[in-house]
Length: 309
Ligand SMILES: [Zn+2]
Image (cartoon, rainbow, N blue to C red; front, side, top):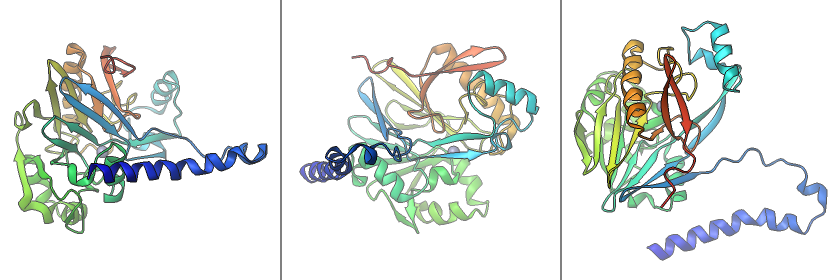
């Protein structure tokens, strides 16, 4: 099993290296076309006590008109000012989708499943695991970019995994008449266990209700060997516009006031206790810290704090 995996990965590495090897023997212009496009790493792994936490890039794309989504209640001038101060444009933004894999030593737990089955399986394999290695799949909430990879027409992507989700979240979507939920999640209903706030996924992994984005949206606190990290999912979906301005309304937040109050509360705790977090839509590898600043917070991307042994 392990040998198969290594062989397959080695084969993929060789295949990926071919164009470069071919380029070595060619003349200058072929290599100077610069047509490869941007490169973003696929996985980023950090230790956390006895756990290993892998952020996985399951998708990234450029999206126009960010103020149609973030800061819909801010003036165009203020949006421009805040964006300019952060060196980002106002006419487009880069979106990221970052499921996270936590290996506790006795369980391999996947948090959220990206956009589709092929994408999440590729991400899990890039992190060094097979889909069948995943023992638990936890859904932070049930928007399409988090449940999309859970199943294909009711066939589970992770055949050996126990499924977990928030009770409030399940209750909402199972009554909502939502096509994606009905296609991806409802057929697996019998395999789910449900969590309420304070519930444990495994020893050291605790559910924290953070509603507003959706009615039962959950964050998860990881704790091992005296170290903490929070998976904040969609609590705050942009590192400048949502972290810096928690009260700026986000189109996808179903209850905008409640979402803002959850942001303030949880970002406040992360800032006070200097706890690192992984935000599902933060720029990859999506790991960072927050610090209180003005009426909001400042995002500080992880550099090497968690890499030191
Ligand atoms: Zn999302």
